[in-house]
Length: 218
Image (cartoon, rainbow, N blue to C red; front, side):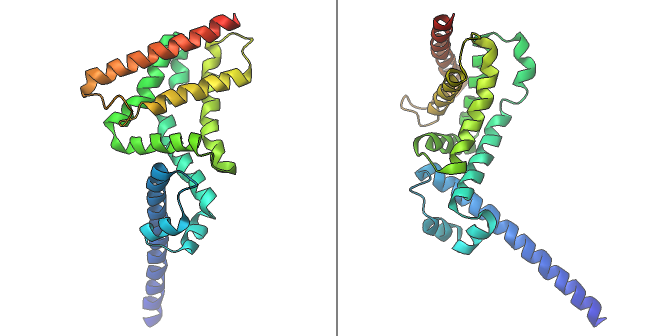
């Protein structure tokens, strides 16, 4: 009987330990997401992060292998949330004009920022990833999203448009979406009608810019 109790007790300890490890990983990830969104990669220190998460440096290394891999995981998670907003668009594109596609893109990527406050954190993370120039694998995450968008834009552009031009247009469009955060300089739109007008204006500006590129390449 004692052996049976011991085996149950040992299993319970392992379960508790596993739960503790999972909890510490999620806590580190949550704190890192907020800190990277507020400060960027370079200004966020492991010392500050571990103090706020109430873990030691060894826990960060155990779960993520270091600061750069932690940042890469944070950005990857953010991009997965954002990319989900445009999932399925490729199946619809055969019926989409360029204006319709841009409207879909802005609505899919901008509207959630105002409707779900947590998405604002995602926007700030992506903005920092463009401005802060994080090292190595971390910096590749935002470019991966731009490559996907560049491929979606290909059908609207002239065959002579180079890969680098398509990628530049994709990065520019992402930048426009990032600027339309709840704390953008013009102020937060009051209600759905103002938000819709903001998106319509953004689409018209983006459409004008892209049409100029298309005309120049024709």
